[in-house]
Figure (spheres, rainbow, N blue to C red):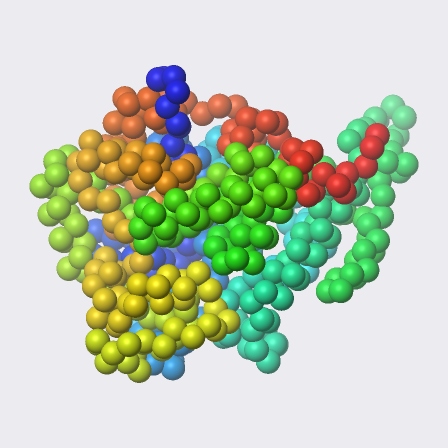
Length: 454
């Protein structure tokens, strides 16, 4: 391994559904995404990723449906734009049993989950995976989800984060403070499984939550799962500076990525943490071939099956704007709404019209595609790392299973040859492998304030 070269981190980006980011590719004759309902689909994916030494599989999720475009779900249903979608968290146990090292970042929307039971669910997964679980903390942005869950409308953007701050404080009390280290003795001779003096009731009465109870699970390898977050708004970045360990971004340019990374690291320091306490992943798609010509032919083949309109319908839900109401070249009103602020802000800054968005979504999704042979793809990945300060990539799928298989077979060996990608997994938990500072959150993280002294 070459010294001094930054090691690239890699997550696969997926979802328990047919169409995730690059829409329409389910129509490709070699695509098997419609098998998402079966366990072999997921265990096979997990084995492929572990063969490629991926750090993790990040599983997205939504609660609600994309009903902004044309004011209905017709395109969403026809193109399977994240509908139907199954629960992501129940996939993890099967994939963990099929692997030894692969990490799992699971999206759960805290707006619609009670913290007391969610704490147990993640502790259970942390035990079953031997410390390979992470949680992508989301607050939601779909009005359709709010209505389905009994709310009259979506909670306001910044208040969603205020509520999330308190939610995390409750979880830290349960994960970090309810059971002391050494509370579980498992002493058969003395008939003491757990020392009662070292288990404490959590008593929390706040603005949004009232919790009185003991954490139901004994301490797991990481206690708190690795915390993922994807908010890039001002309020989202402040939330990340206090809580997040991994942040996902989808910038339109290298300059935008560089500014986002710099702002995040500055806010980390202001929050009393170290600049390296967050790993930043950028979303991208990769179409790799044995030659550049083969990769371009593959990309053209994929593009012929992709749905630009489905990509636009997805983006409509992300911004809360029905682009179907606009002529192709008409200016779009990007007035602030209550959806994903960063997505709306980016579109507004670039003045994207409906025509321009359709051009951008030629592969059915909003992430830039890197197309080429192994050397060309590796050059691009290294260029993004060097020019922006990101730590790695969230690779979205195109045609499955070949998109990840091609990356593992072609690109991974090239990255290893250059000394910028691991040749074996390190032992330990997901947090330990990502940061090299042990299984637990460091003392400078907000969660540490809720720990009890021995």
